[in-house]
Image (cartoon, rainbow, N blue to C red):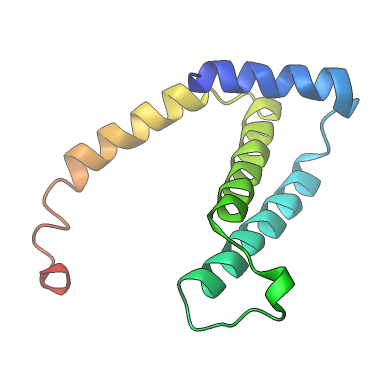
Length: 111
């Protein structure tokens, strides 16, 4: 699925099942909530934080689900603010190639 197809699919889902987009501010708050859920899984899977109970253990499938939730909300925000994510990502990558092409190679902290 291309990014353009993803944007179209999410838009169609909103129209068919979501009634309408939440406001941009509400979707921003939801995005922060979803990013927090990714952080919680990461802290337990890869960090020092422990799980509350064995039955609450998160695994790779939970991380995938939480990352997908983040992408869904980002796509909603892009759709409702009329941003073509393909164009935005291409522009961002071009910037990274021109501005940052040596930045990390020259970072002594990464060697």
